[in-house]
Length: 429
Ligand SMILES: Cc1ncc(COP(=O)(O)O)c(C=O)c1O
Image 1 (cartoon, rainbow, N blue to C red):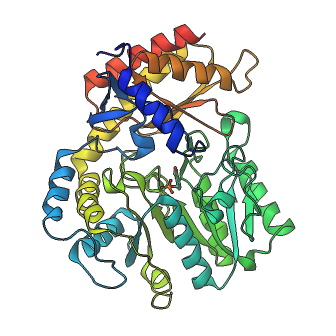
Image 2 (cartoon, rainbow, N blue to C red; image 1 turned 45 degrees about the vertical axis):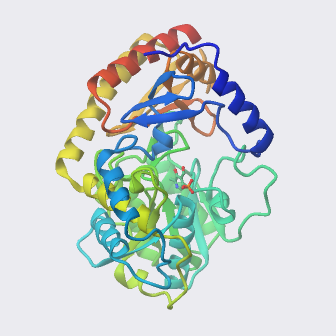
């Protein structure tokens, strides 16, 4: 792997252009991609990288997945855009059918297609409010649901996502989020929810409880095994809907179409995005047909939601995720990665916890007193980058490293990635 191409004339030129023209509030390093395939990326100066970030979870099917590319090429010859709010087209309907199959539960389901994860969450909230005729939405500590006004309000991490950007949307209530590694158990979180429903909002004013089955930005925190069912029970008691936000945890990331299917509950509404489009922008909401159909004509939709090119890609991407071979190989990848992460943890006392669900895994980096260590985490990320491995932090304290490697990564990719990760820990300690 050629990671040391110096000097970097193209990178330097483009970085200067980026500084000059791109709003500096966008995150990301001046690393310019020339092409990408599977779990590998090549930059504009010929460097090769192993990608354990996968476009922050958009590349579960691998970069430039050949079947996705072929479907998009085929669609190009038919039409680029229509606007589903005006004229119908088959790929949109096909994607709704496939997406509904990802939603667990033996009941009639329907879907709507949108552009981004945040837009999916916005729509799920709108639909829940409309159906229940209630306004309150309960979300959790450590949550990430997006960057629009409503979803930023639902998101827990103030810096950088909310700082200076208020006032926030009304009728959002934050409950205790389970975090066993930090001593917050499922019981604590359920107690917190009961307290919230007494002290802050009456359950008769709550439309929905939204949570990520595995909190993504919050540090890849899988919900404790019993927590979703206990939440669903409380919700059912009060006529509150359950929304599972699967934007990051869905589409095979945990080995199954949805992460919530590991927990045996059937949410009323679910939100999808990221890898759903195999690299093209598309998102969706699925839900019980009677809830989805409760909204009046024209009450939901948008200009670009379910764009035909994205639908062509999503048909292939969701089809792959629904295939049991894809799921089996994702689960096997998860097991191999977990063994390697545990091996890494055994050698590095700075790893406080290894956790995950299927191949959605992370490590939490702590200092000698067990406190979150964001500085060492950032150093490890830099060391890895300089050796040709792209990894990314997560967590409210920015001290977790998440692994979002494309699920099609080969054994060689994984072996090489973990060799670099081991070296990076040694160099940063
Ligand atoms: C769980 C979850 N919900 C919503 C979003 C927002 O998605 P988008 O960035 O496509 O708006 C994200 C993005 O990371 C996410 O992880």
